[in-house]
Length: 139
Image (cartoon, rainbow, N blue to C red; front, side, top):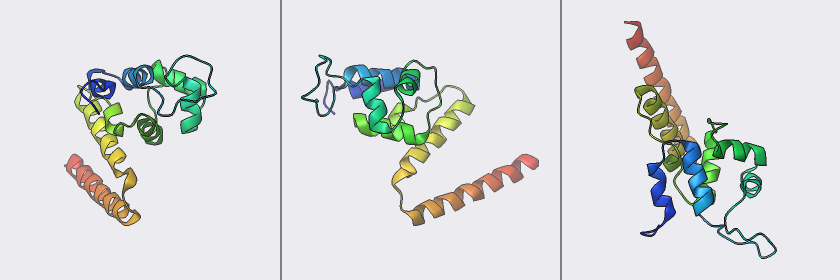
């Protein structure tokens, strides 16, 4: 990223929808389509939908905050299109519960490329901590 790269500004937006919309309206296509007659250098909802395997209305709903709970697969796919880290698309919330959830999503995004053995280890660790938390909550 360069000094004036619009990707650097996404942290200033408070929702996934705002961050996604910012990328859609500020990051041009990585490979402009020579056959395209539209003047816009930016991806359309339909193009992003085709690239990540989702419908145009779904992409529109994500951009307009009408669908506010995309799966990690969707977040990772969008991040790959725009060359950003998936965690950059997930805003840090101000409440403890939402912050906790955002942190968990960030960890899940980072785990996407772990080996099967590492994922098994991570899963065992999560199960251990979940059991520890449950035992602590009962006391």
